[in-house]
Length: 215
Image (cartoon, rainbow, N blue to C red):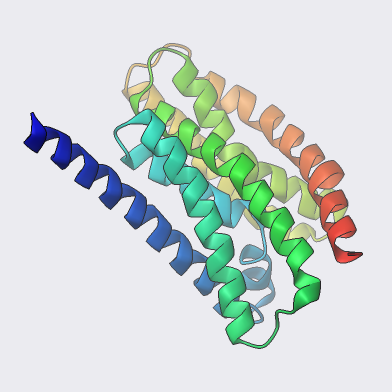
């Protein structure tokens, strides 16, 4: 009994350590890629590029509560990795604390949600797996819409929308092969979820970032 308990604790610690480590690397890497090309500049300064990785992590983690915690910790670690790299690069000062706080809060909200969605797509039951698939791709589709409609960067937005559409098709096909009832809900709900995310990003996140910049 004691051995089994110790083994579970070691497994939990290993999973959380891995998610934190990946988050730190992701944050540092995205900072390092700034300024390379316009598309990479956008991709490394986006919500979806960071947060969609938590869906992949959630799909890989067996226990649902652990997947949710892993998603939260990964996003916090990503913020730490990014702003630590920024500090080492001499581009982070006291004025950036507000922005860092906003991204951390956004990560704490979105990380667990996307990790839970990724877990559900792979390990859930019934048609909720299809709904979770739509949630998984909404961040990419929503950011593509926001780039085009909100910022008028249609070239970059088209790339995000294409990636989101391909991911939607792949997930819908995966769910169909798995025999998920109403697997088509993934494709049907993905655009709706993307629009909702676009509105949230434009109306909430942009407003918070604007307020943070005034601190």
